[in-house]
Amino acid sequence: SKTQVGFIGLGNMGKPMAKNLLKHGYPVIATDVFPESCKELQELGAQIVDNPAEVADQADRVVTMLPSNPSLSRLLTGYVPNGSLKVKKGSLLIDSSTIDPAVSKEMAVAAEKMGAVFMDAPVSGGVGAASSGKLTFMVGGVEEEFTAAQELLTCMGANVVYCGAVGTGQAAKICNNMLLAIGMIGTSETMNLGIRLGLDPKLLAKILNMSSGRCWSSDTYNPVPGVMEGVPSGNNYQGGFGTQLMAKDLGLAQTTATNTKTPVPLGSLAHQIYRMMCARGYASKDFSSVFQFLREDEEN
Ligand code: NAD
Image (cartoon, rainbow, N blue to C red; front, side):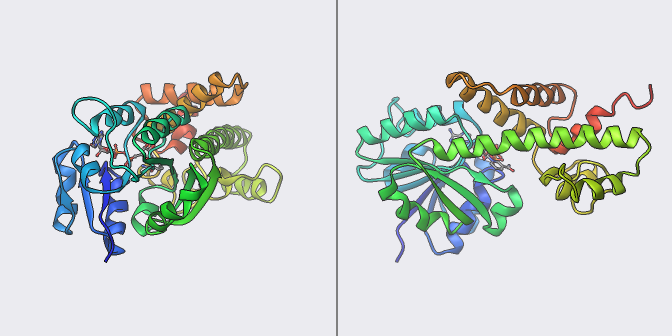
């Protein structure tokens, strides 16, 4: 029979991911600081414990799905109550949160000191993909351990891509989201300009999508209400990928760009635009609401 898998962080993403591990027959031992989020998983047969230390004590493979860097570094010291990482020798720690790759590297060093292996495996795809087990995992870490990680990740994802040394999974994820943000803002301001110039938005989108301006934001996730069905712009920007999460990922991109002295002028501007949106009440709306943000002064 399959051996127990630890899961830390049962939020929007973590809960459905852990459910898929159960579905594939893995006994799951899990924890979350919020006891509420553990209930459903417990009912499905997972063992719930009080803290990460207990998870690391019992499972030799642990998946983490946490909000951001501070929570992950806190967790790093939270595997044991007194402060330093303590995990079983030979255990495999897989972190699927989106964090600064520099933190992933620190985690890997700390894990290695304990005779354990740490891999970063951030995901692309939202809550829907997490529920249906169709996530894409971008994996960084020692290549010899990839097969072991893959065995678990394929229960939760449709694509599991090896990227290179630890931190490169995060790098791929951060780069993708920076381009996504830039593309979404570009699509939004372009659509808005066209509308102001008298073009029908549906027609403009159609033309863009058969021309060189086409991108994912124009052809599969158009930000203009009424252009497409089944996207957040058609549903008052509810659901989808939150502006606040996008702002967080753009902040990570800025940090990595600063650390590597890499110019990212459009990434910086995109970060500031999404930060402004958070301050103006868009935090929990889908990130395509930047179109609405750009039209706030429509009446003037
Ligand atoms: P979330 O806030 O819903 O879930 C995080 C969970 O971690 C919460 O339940 C919280 O209580 C728990 N937690 C925090 N600190 C803890 C600790 N020390 N010990 C135990 N539990 C702790 O966030 P989410 O939407 O599930 O996202 C998780 C990660 O996945 C983020 O890094 C996010 O950027 C990334 N991500 C999210 C999406 C998405 O669409 N939501 C898509 C791709 C990637």
